[in-house]
Length: 267
Image (tube, rainbow, N blue to C red):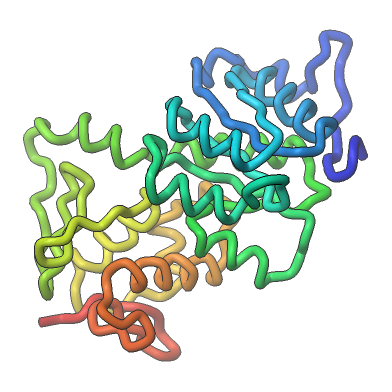
């Protein structure tokens, strides 16, 4: 183990693992990763391995700096520690989602606490995935790559808006989901969604009345790219209800079918 929470792999004489040597680092292009970690040993090791993979890491040590950078610079991924000086990781995560130029950036949260409630709280705050310390750098890189394979809302909107054959908007019960522009509205109110939230909402709304099991939603929305469980599905559903429903505790749009899964109301 290196530092307080990272398991480092073995290197060859060239300074890379055999797996890294077999891959072309240029495949990551110039993707920028904001690394928010107050432990300098962990921060340096995470940044080193991201750099070896071809990423461009930008490291900061506290929540205030992280939020300032997220509001002023574009990033392709955020690796965010939960326990930080200044603003804590949950507050930073919520602020990024709410009012920054990186509102749809994938967020990988790091936590030293293994309680399920902490992980769920991180996901409910807007994180896309989480890792518990101590973690393997190799697993961290794998999860980072998985998150980066997922299309971002802002880029998809630009790429697909003019394409012929793009799926048409779906409107159900006052909710409009536009897959070309990657936008969602409830009546006249535009709703800010993460990429995962949008994909899950579009799948349900486009198939209103159809019941999807949690396993089916994992397969259709996550596609096996990340380390997800059925609890992740429940967390995203809760986030969607808070954004869409008048009363998230008494949902009228995204319904639970007990013992089966979820469906969008059929009206």
